[in-house]
Length: 328
Image (cartoon, rainbow, N blue to C red; front, side, top):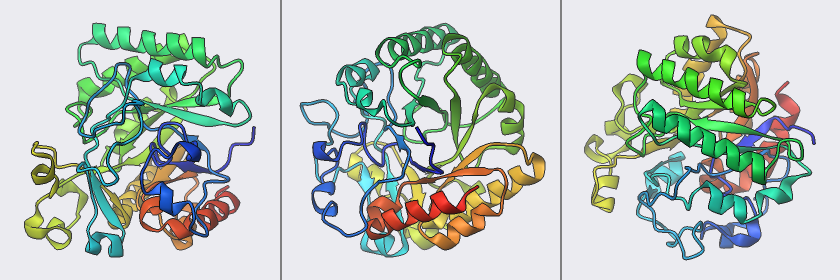
């Protein structure tokens, strides 16, 4: 059960990572492209919630595959494809954790290490506690850690829902309590916390002893001024096209090449603050040169690939292999 240095961003392979299921319509064509395969990459499931969630994306009757070839919750233009960036406001559409556990796909991964991505929806601690108890009960029952080698990614900064937006003292304390509860209920299973690259480094230092590490970055909330991204340069009038597409006030999250400088700045900050941290770094990584840059930082223990699989699919296999050889 070798743990490779390359991980998928949550959802890049869908909920199950079984290419025969064709969870995303474009996979019907991409699978014929030379260089498009996920061999050598640690599977990370698309983020699930305890209960089924409608989100902003219609799913097929089977409950997990996206209904439309090009859903309105995902935005790519000719310009963005050329420069390697995109928006999404999928909104965690999913059939619920128990549904997916009963589908019996994750159980086929007994031969390899992988991650299950989870988001806690509740806001009151009593409800959060119940939610985590139920999640752990289901995982212990359907995916007992004694038989399967996996860790949990706790998605704590999704910009496409009403949850996980903004970090303050109360939020940090709450995250600590979540991690302590996971440790109590699943003591042999590690938990990585997933944040976007705008997270304060002090937050990571405070929570370091309660988790196995961090996945940075999640998508960046559209329009965030602290990111130094020139939104007017990349988007007409500096506005997100998603609200008009969705008919809902979801501006979505940015992923792709133009957010790599933001990721790099955060990695530099983490390295200076605490060289002993464990970071799986992701966000706009589309070239071997970017992998080389990140490999110079001891805190980077792995690389997460996402947008490259959609916007530069022919590079995927070689980038996975190169990362596994380069990151120490």
